[in-house]
Amino acid sequence: MTANARSIIVGTAGHIDHGKSTLIEALTGTHPDRLEEEKRRGITIDLGFAFLEEGGVRFGFVDVPGHERFVKNMLAGTTGIDMVLLVIAADEAIKPQTREHFDICRLLGVKRGVIALTKVDLVDRDTEELVRLELEEFVKGSFLEGAPVVAVSAKTGAGLAELKTTLHDEAQKIAEKQTQRYFRLPIDRSFAVKGFGTVVTGTLISGEIAAGDEVELLPEKKLLRVRGVQSGGKTVDRAGAGQRTAVNLAGIEHTAVQRGMVLAAPARFVKTRRVDARMELLASAPLLKNRARVHFHVGTAETIAEILLYEKKELQPGETGFVQCRLVDEIVCVRGDRFILRQFSPVITIGGGAILDPLAKRPTRKDQGHVGFLHTLGDGPREEILRAMIERNILGVRGDELIARTGWMEAEIAAAAKNLAAAGTIRSVNVEPMMLLAESLFQDMAKKLLACVESFHKENPLLPGVSREELRAALGRRVRTETFRAALEELEKQKKIVLQGEVVKKPGTEVTLTPEEARAKQQIEQAFAKAGLAVPSVKEVLALLAIENRRAEKILQILLREKALVRVSPELIFHREALDRLPALLQTYKKSKGDRIGVPTFKELAGITRKYAIPLLEYLDRQRLTRRSGDERVIL
Ligand SMILES: Nc1nc2c(ncn2[C@@H]2O[C@H](COP(=O)(O)OP(=O)(O)OP(=O)(O)O)[C@@H](O)[C@H]2O)c(=O)[nH]1
Ligand SMILES: [Mg+2]
Image (cartoon, rainbow, N blue to C red; front, side, top):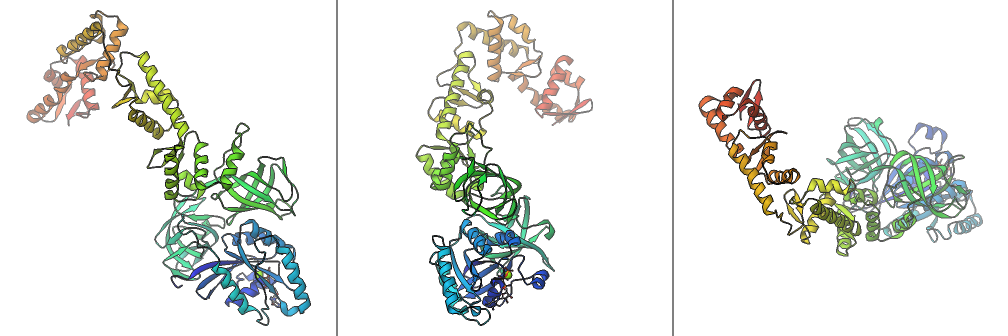
């Protein structure tokens, strides 16, 4: 493939036997029917592929079956096409699958097309003119209104050159693809190639892929390595959005991959069984009741959905409405992806639409704002959509969730978030990973947090402040770590609180003790300092004080928080300085006597009884100054 050739995917559409496959062969030289059964029966059953390079444009044709029983295969092939080649036989004109395929193309959002009036060798000029008129009427008001109609005959070759030129002209009008988005390839085939292993194919709908890439198979969530990439039957360095692509995968059997699965950039997309969407019920369809079960098609995947109507009890033919689709199987999609609905039985196409939110929540009666939210998702500009997604989540939303829901790039989301933050509507509570919260919710949280700090001071006048841990617990579980930290930092910036290590306090709230309390504090500390390692019990010390026990306990807490005293065991408290002498003592011992020391020797060395020796050794073990080894300690 020439480096800068444009790649355009053309999908055929049209009633059975109208000459789709024959026309593709006449255009490309390749007959798209591959299966033995197709050849025997003379009909197309599954998708076929062929390529044509014409005036710098590389056309990838996806040939679909016209038989009504194989519409689901047609659907898988029509995903991601740039243009439709609607095939109508001049001798039969418009037939049921002409209509159905045309509806599907419209619902899938196909924007351009060319109409081929095939088998013109079988009709006279008058009939041809009549069919042309019928056709014009048929496409009126649709994306195909005014589209070129080319009369062709695969038998005589008439019109084929004109058709090629017309396809080329239409291709020029197609906008560039989204190679800048994350890689996503809905798989339509998986097979084994001798000497290569597993190969999967599909129409690359966004991003790029190259040999050596790591990709994720969804909904399996399996990471795989790409051995090689082909596009249009030729090995390429990389393939981009809008190309028919074959990917040679390492590490998986071809039977483990099926049509409907998606190959994607790792960790960017999610699987889901509940999506919110806007749907259109075809005018030709019967009325749709709430909770109806239908066949649901998105990408190359197919499952069964229960349709919950948001505003109405039923949808009339021709109406549009917001719906939630509850799916039987997991699928992968993002906002904007198109889907098709087919009646459960008999299976006919009844409608379709666009995904609004692939990570929809179970609807609740309480949630009054949901329909408004769906309107925003459907029609809003990017910033509005992000704002709505963020505001509707009281815990805040992570960047990767926003990517998975919208398919937008991280940088696009970050840029929009920056604008929203500057406008004061949202708050970035963490950068890596990105975490966004509505500003109003953030302010509420900060207010609550400040109130907690204030009431702590009121209830604990003798304590310097509340620990972060206690504060977090006081706020309840419905706050994320990132939000909590951001709120603390914000309040500190506003000088409303002071952060001192683990302690959070109001500024200017130095603990002031009464002279009586100050004296008691000194007495406690001195009692332990004097005792060295042979400390008295806490009870004994507190009993000597002039203040009542409850206040004395609090003062003890202050000394522990200030780390002047250290609690070594539930009963024993030591002065920091006494403990600080132990490591040097042990190291001196180690130098002269070796690194092992038993309890009796330790008692002697420290000049203490067994009552203190055991808790102190356990303390030293916890501090990793010693390690227990049988009856002895190893000095570390
Ligand atoms: N006379 C004439 N016959 C044609 C022409 N094009 C196709 N046919 C015949 O029409 C029949 C059906 O053609 P296909 O190309 O298989 O039709 P199709 O639309 O692919 O059919 P499905 O894939 O089964 O939907 C074949 O017997 C073709 O030989 C044409 O231009 N003129
Ligand atoms: Mg065919």
